[in-house]
Length: 211
Image (tube, rainbow, N blue to C red; front, side, top):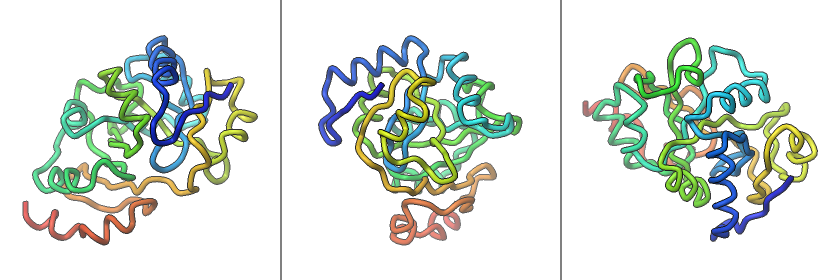
């Protein structure tokens, strides 16, 4: 089942459907500022297990936490150093996943064996609206198939019977987020993806060296 939304001004009724489904513990496929992602409410244990099953994800792999802002992110991640905080403030919302040690507020079913969490502050109006109404983060992971699926019609034909709905935000670019490892209090690039121009503009040295 596909729910189509306006890419810039998502319809309120569609947002209400999404929020209601997530509140009921459903898994959806949602557009982000990079690729499409499986997503569920972060307080839905069965939905978390379903996402791991859908992607055949190893137990040691953490899911990403989709937050509205740094204030929400700080409730679930520990060890955000001053330099990392400055970089996050300058670069978010944007196409970055920040890896941190998870604190006790984070559901351990979603952290992997290393007890880490990937923080995303997504630059997409739909995600911001939905998370804002839920008042808790979403848990997510990108939808894969050799490369990332980027067409909602293909997503629906492949996963439509295994998720509650595919939210059509248009064809996405086939580039995942840049993963930045911040576990040790400094930033190291673990995977280069979208946001290369932001990294080049901001630079990392400034934020690492001025601790």
